[in-house]
Image 1 (tube, rainbow, N blue to C red):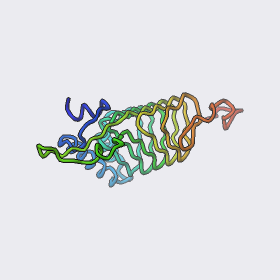
Image 2 (cartoon, helix red, strand yellow):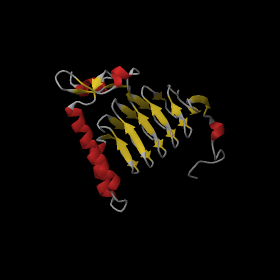
Image 3 (cartoon, rainbow, N blue to C red):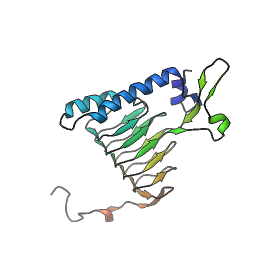
Image 4 (cartoon, one colour):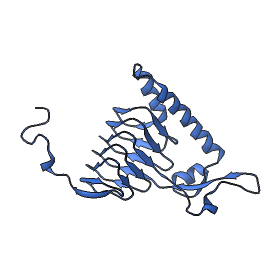
Length: 206
């Protein structure tokens, strides 16, 4: 297996691998262009976004600044919005459904490092190859999800459909469908119900 194949499979891999470093450099160059693009030229911005995150649906919009690891490991559905200063560390796959809103300064972090420093620290082996071992866990976010500002989503987490994650939460475990969840660590607090309608006596667009 290549180091890239190990990486996306969630196995230990060498993050200092030359091919991976090249891919990360290409992603950083694209994000640099994206973050410097002007709101006055949306056509250019969206064209860069297509290259940064090629696996996306219709009607997606991301505000600069954005940071990604690779971009190719991110899959986004239709009607996606991400606010300022987002970070998606897509070492493992990040799968995001349809109609997802993400607030400002949200981090989705798939990478995990060994707990023991002797395994975690960067070394040069006998063949003078630099080795920095890490692994990652995928993140899945369902449809119709709102993730409020300042949330951190850790690797290995699955967020269900029709979920709201409160501001500042740290999501370390799965959240089931239809829940309002918040806290550090984030926990499912209660079901979202018809009682939460802001306009119960009429349709939203009446």
